[in-house]
Length: 154
Image 1 (cartoon, rainbow, N blue to C red):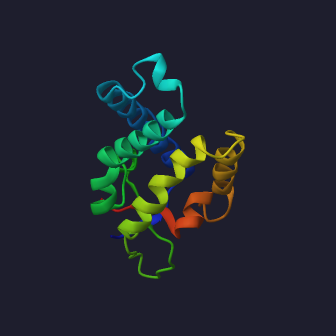
Image 2: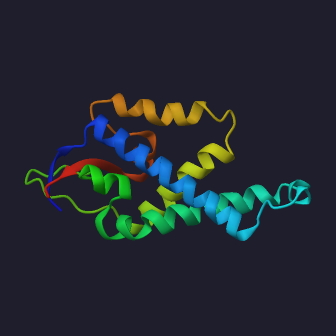
């Protein structure tokens, strides 16, 4: 995969907005189809939250798993012409795609856990995004995964 440079913050934001619409919509559809929270009794214990978390991860993997695996892109990133790659310096512009295990086992779990398990729910997402204003334009989850988001040559 050949890159043109770091992905701009605007492209990343647009890609996140696309994904932020599609993944929750599919999650809601999966919740409705599986009847996870159909009756008031479903809320009697906290197991419904685990079910919703797993359905959110399933929705993410259904929408983005194949494109992340093959191209290092979510659907939003694909539309914006950017991709997740390994964070490594390359003088030739060639970079290796991020390993599948990092994309799925680290990144896929990061976001649902961010919002479900770690209170206060607003601080960590904000902290995650503040890192994008650094010189390398890498969010906290990029640093944790050893990845960066780059513009790719089409």
